[in-house]
Image (cartoon, rainbow, N blue to C red; front, side, top):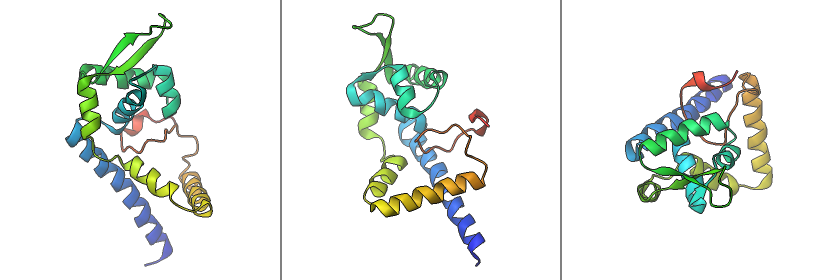
Length: 159
């Protein structure tokens, strides 16, 4: 097998892993990876502002609004007026949301982060360089992407 085929197989394995993870997560928690990440961020301190969540995820405020709406509909978070600034709303994890966090499977990106951070600096730099080159080869440099591994609907990506 030539190197081109080997590289395409590796890329396909990465894509397939995110797809399988998304299905596993949906079955286990009834959430998408981005929904789980919103829940995790809000759960770290018990609550977070939508703008803080958007900044952490690297997505727009509108995207966070949609994700929070879905979590509110599932009674996993609630929107509460800030005690410090009445103009601000906090996304607060409910007891049901905390139960989902406690039972959620190990997120694919968390596995990646643990293993990536255990690598030597030179190995991290090499992987980053290779991944950035692959993104450039796929003309994907300008696609809006958050540090959340998720296989989702491509029509939501900016081109």
